[in-house]
Length: 380
Image (tube, rainbow, N blue to C red; front, top):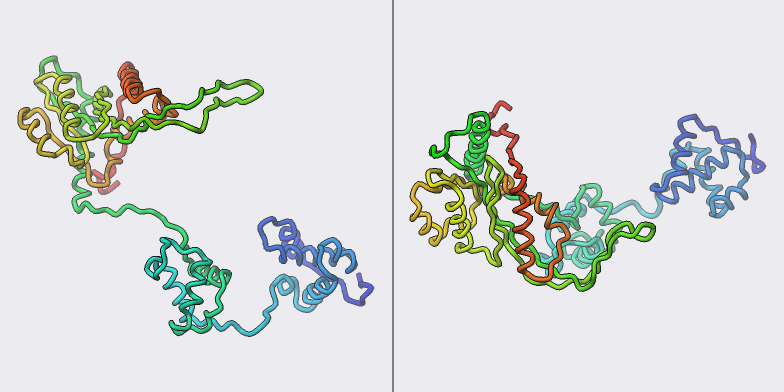
C-alpha cells in the first residue's frame, strides 16, 4: 500500500519477514537492531510514522531514515550501522601491538595487577601509544580494545589452568601402576589360597590433609514442612584445627586401615605401616601403591622398613598422577558421606567420628576396581 507521505510499500520476502520477527523478539540482540526490525515490520504492516515513532519510542526522523534506507537498499542495509566520521585509522601494526601488550601481564608493565581489565589495558595503551609509535591509539577506549581482542580472540582477563607434566618417566610409572591393577583383577578370577599360603596383598595408600574441625556457634534447625524444607545452619563457626587422614585401602577385599592425625610427617606414616604389619599375616608380602610424598621415602621411614625385610614393596604413582591412586575414590566417598557438612565440638570428636565412619565402611567393604586398561594396549 502507498503511504500518505508518498513512499512506496516495503516488500519483504517470507525469509526476510521471519528474520525481522525473530530479531524484533530477541532479548540478546543490540537494542538499536531490535528497534530497526520493529520499524520495518511496522511499516510493512501499514503503520504510519507517528504510530511507529510512539510504539518504538524513537523520533520520527529516525523512523524516516531507516524506512528510506530499507526502500533504497533493502532490509540488510537498513539494519546495519551507517559508517560515519573519518575512516578507521588503526593500522594492522597497531592492532598487533595491542594484542602483544594484552599477552603480557600488567605487573610486567609496571603495574601491580596480575590480570588486565579492559579499562586498565585501554589506559595503559593510551599512555604508551605515542612512545611506541602508534599515535592512532592515543585516544583508544575500552570498546575499541574489546573489538580488537574479540577479533583475535584474546581473553587477557581470564586464566585457564593446566597441569604441566614434569615427570619424564610418567608413561613408564603409569604402566607399572596399571599392571598392578591388572594383576589384582586376575586374582579375582582365581580360587582363594589355603590359609597360611604366602601371598601378595596390594594396598593403596594416601593422605587426605586439612580436614577442618569446625564447631557450630548456634544450633542446627531441623526441616519444617511449610516453612523451610531444608535444615537450617548458622553461618558462623569456630575453627578447632585440622586433621590429616592417612588411609590404606585393600584392593582385594576393600578393607580400610586408617589413622587420624594432627600432623602428616614420617612418624605418622610409619605408624600406619606398623598398623598394616600388625593386621596382615606374617607370611604375606604387602605391596604398597603410593605417591611421592617425602614422608614415604624419608630416612625415618627407610629405617623402619629396613627392620621388616621383604615385608613391604613400593609402587609409586607418577608425579602429578594422584588420579591413578584408587584410594582417592575412598576419600571421595568419605567427602560425600560422613565428612559432608560435619560439625563437631572438639578436635577429638572429629577424630572419633572419622574413625567411626571408617568402621562403618569396614562393616560392608566395597572393592574399588580400576576399569580402564587401554594404556596397556597401544592398539586400543
